[in-house]
Image 1 (cartoon, rainbow, N blue to C red):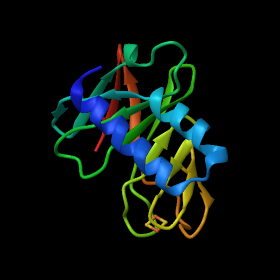
Image 2 (image 1 turned 90 degrees about the horizontal axis):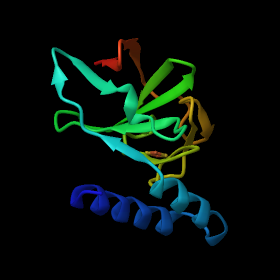
Image 3 (image 1 turned 90 degrees about the vertical axis):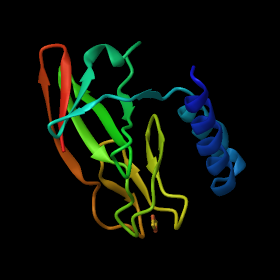
Length: 143
Ligand code: FES
């Protein structure tokens, strides 16, 4: 685990602790600890994530690139089927915290399911979805 990843987990788990009750804290922290982060290069508007990033039956990979204002959640939705969502709250543009079961906003409490749909208001719009396709051994996210 690289230093940057550790710092991010520590920071986001700290945010988890500040906004959720003790009863759900354990599951939130468990979700944070199990997330996989990748930093693919952006080439001509396409992020290319190796299929091998989804290890041990994982269904979620967080995609990070310096040119992005927000991380992207890359979700394995079926055999060789993937969807990707911008991790920006649709209420007032706050960065979302990802767990293995969904995404939540620490500003006003909205949450989103793993398929990008709103679970808890005040957000009313689903997450922005990017066109995503498999090309050989890569999942391509078209920005
Ligand atoms: S900005 Fe996310 S709930 Fe308000």
